[in-house]
Length: 193
Image (cartoon, rainbow, N blue to C red; front, side, top):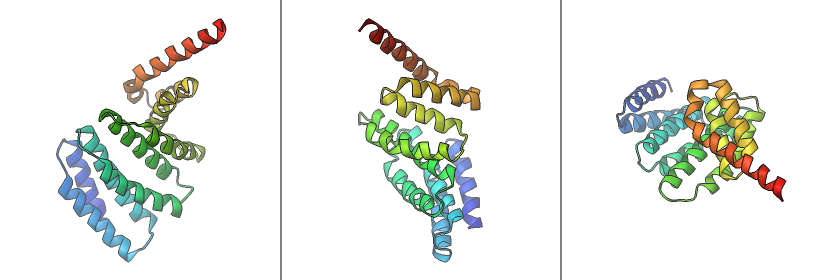
């Protein structure tokens, strides 16, 4: 397991610095898989392998490559993790964020993100209900609300994300502003009707 964690760190560094850490990711996944064979169902090992896969999938999506298969493997690990540790808020959030990111990637490929967003919502809701405080997850749930025309809920999540992490939340500012404009229009339409 320790070797897998070291390879995870090295793969993470490579990915953060714009390098395709595929070889390190595969080696890290293999290390965690061997650890799972020795320690079946171990939540720490599952989390490690899921995190490697999730981060690599995010990197693939950011660089315009298809992350769907990598995300599927990460989701399988997070499924096992939430089954083993249903009170672990971050496992729920990570599973939800993978689904949102996969939906956004599909949308960028002219696909429909709504099925992924629909799967993400209960995961994100559960993570927050368990007390998680994560600005990225709040922003992503705001995107889900926005996509479903839930303007007030989207604005509330974007505002909370900004409160938690002011610098990071600015990236979603245009989406939040769009939600505010649409909410104002809906209120005007109600008033006129």
